[in-house]
Length: 336
Length: 261
Image 1 (spheres, each protein chain N blue to C red):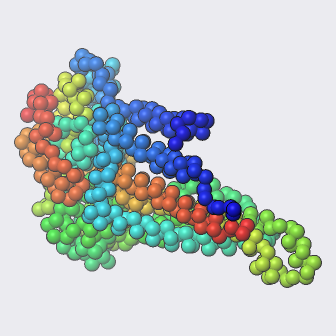
Image 2: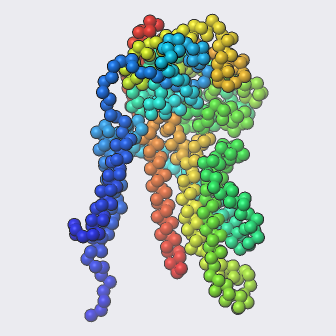
C-alpha cells in the first residue's frame, strides 16, 4: 500500500475533513459547559410552562400577583403547551425554568437525564378523568378494551390511566391499538367511531356525552390518582431559591383567591384560554383540587409512578423518588 | 503467449482502500461520537451515545417491536408505491404521448407537485380518516411524482430518427409505442422508479406520525412523547439504512436492466 502520492493524500484529506466536521458539530451540540458559580437569586426572568386551564397560574398572571410580588424589573412568562410531553421538549432545551405536568411525563423526562426536581403538587384530580367510548364499540368497561383502538396523547396522564386500566384488567398494551392523538383529535375520532375509546378529562367528557354518540365506561377512581406536579430545572432552583419560594407563595395566594372568587376566576381563565365555554371551564375547576404541598405522599406517589413506568418499559432504569423531590422550597415559602 | 485477465496488483489495494473509506468514515464518526458522549461533552438528553442507541435497538429487537414496526412500514410503502407507481406510469405515458393532455394538466399538476408529503397528512386524515388509507395515499403521492416526470420525459425523448424510420416503414401507432417509444423510455422510467421508491420510504415517516398505531414513524413519534431520544435515533437509523439499501439495490438493478442502453 502506498502511503504517499496525490491519490492517497486526497483520500486522507477527505477522511480528516469528515472527522473534523463531525467533531465541530459535536462540540456545537454540547451544552455541558460549566458556568462559573453566580450569586444567588440574580435571575431577572422566570419562565413557567403550563398546559390548559391551570387556574392559579393564569389568575396570578392576569390579576398581576406576580408583578406585585416581584416588581417591574422581574418578568414572569407563562407560555402555554399542548401537554406534558410538549413541555418536556422545551424543558430539555432549557427554554422554561419551572413547569407543570403529570407524574408520568416528569418521570420520563427525569429518566432521560434531564436534571429536574419536583417541588410541589399543582393539582390532583380524584375523579376528573374518564374512559369514554363510542356507543358502537361494544365496550362497557375497561375489561372490554382487548383488541380495541384507543386514542390518547402518548406520555400524558391519560396514557398512564389507560395503562392502569389495562393493568388492572390484565390486558397487555400490545393487545390494544394505541393511536397517538391530541385532545381535539381524540374527541372527533371517538365521536365518529374512528377509534373505539379515549381517555379524557372534563369538560371534554360532558361535551362528548352530550353528542349522544359517546358513553362513559369508567372513571379514574380505583385505578389511578391523577396529578399535575410543579417542577423546576435544578440549575435554576439552586441558583434562585428565594425567587422559587416567592413564586410558590404567589401560587398559593392565587389558589386562595380563586377559591373565594370562583365565578370571576372562571371568566378569567376562559378568556385567557380563548373559549366562551364558562360551564366547561367551571367543570374543569370543580374536578381538580389545586394545592401547594410536597409531603411524603408526593414521594410515595412518584415511587409508584417510577415503578409503574419501569414495568411498562417506558423507562429502562429505575431511580429514587427521594432524589427527584425537593420539599425545601415549599418549606421556605412557609406553606408546609 | 496469450493475454490474461489478471487484474493489476494495485487493483486489490485500491479496492481495500475504497471499502475502508466507505465503511471507515461512518465507523470513525460513531467512535468519535461515543468517545465525546462518554466523556460528557454531549447533552445525553438530546444526543444519546451510540451505545445507548445500540441498547435501545437490542431491546426493541428482543421484544419484537422492531420487526413489528418495520414490517408495518414496509407494507405501507409497498402498497403506496404500487398505487403511486401505476398512477405515475399511466399519467406519465398520457402526458408524454398526448400534447393536448399535457397542456390541459400542466397547471393543475404543477400546482399540486410542490406540496410536500408532510403537508398532505392532516388533509388526508380529514378526508380518509386515521386508518391505513390516508397513510398509503400520502406515500403514493410521494412515489407518484418522480415516476410520472421520468416516464413523461422518457417518452418525449424518444429518438426522432427511430420514429422517422418507423413512419417510413409504415408501422402503426401501437407498434411504434410498443417497440420504439416504451423501450426507449425504460432508462428514465427505471430512474423514476428508483426515486419514487426512495420518496415512498421517506414519506412513510410523515404518514405515520399522526393517527398510526404501528410503523417506524409511529415508533419515532412515540419515543418523542416519552422523551426517549435513543429510540428516536434507532428509528432514524433504520430509515437511513433502508433508504441507502433501496437506492443501492435499485441502482444495481437499473444498471443490469439497461445495460443494452
